[in-house]
Length: 121
Image 1 (cartoon, rainbow, N blue to C red):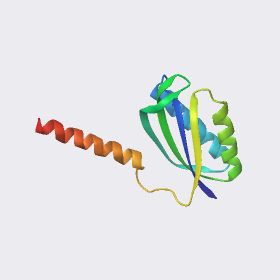
Image 2 (image 1 turned 90 degrees about the vertical axis):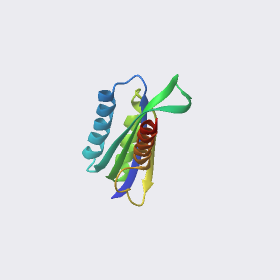
Image 3 (image 1 turned 45 degrees about the horizontal axis):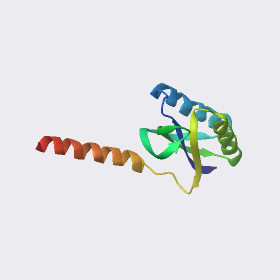
C-alpha cells in the first residue's frame, strides 16, 4: 500500500475536542477503506501567514496514512465538504518519518529555550 501524509487546517473557533473529532472522522474514513493511520499529531493553534475565510489562526493536524489511492480520494472529498476544515493537503511519501515530526521537535526546542531564558532572569 502507498504511504501518505495528510495535513488539514481547522477553523480557529473550534475547541480542541472538536479538532480531535475531525481527526477521528478522517481516521474512520481511512479504516473503512481498508487502510490505517499510523500516526496522528495535533500541532495546535498557530498563526496563518494570511487570512483564510476571515481566520487569522488555525488548528493544524497531521495524519500519517497507509492506504490505497481511492481511499485518499474519498478522504479528500469528505474533507472538501466539511466546513470546519479551511485547507488540506495530501502528499505521497516514500516512507514515514519515525518519531515526532519537525513541527513537534520545533515546539519542544522553543519550550526548552524559553525555560532556559526564564532561569537566567
